[in-house]
Amino acid sequence: MATEIRELICINCPLGCQLAVTLEDGVVVAVKGNTCKRGDVYGRKEVTNPTRMVTTSVPVDGSATERMLSVKTATDIPKGKIFDVMDALVGVRAQAPVRIGDVIVPNVCDTGVDIVATRNA
Image (cartoon, rainbow, N blue to C red; front, side, top):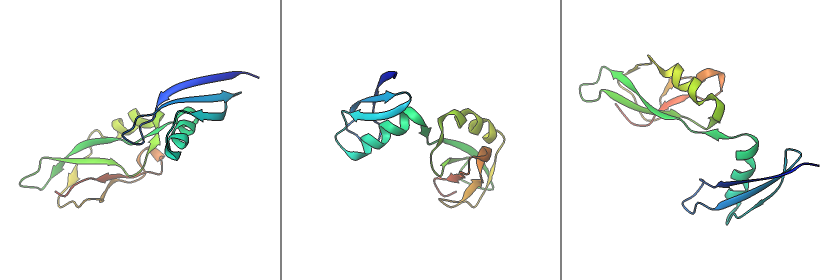
């Protein structure tokens, strides 16, 4: 049985707990160092299937005051898809008027996650 301990810092809240995640044969058997349940969940997820939110901006057409529109993934995506998502957004332009939460790109890179506006334009 192969035992591995991975150390990481939790990013789920401002505390930034230092976690020690113990894996046996690739399966998480313990998470230590967290001060809340979110740290345990984060540690387990981060070593088995890391995900991230993507935030960026795209040009917006038809607005007299805004040239760029801030956007993000509606939920987190697999970490390995970040660069694919960024590549997919090259050339995307939003058309004003846009409201917070409007879908700019549906199902980006077949992740099942939409790119949404984070402000009005």
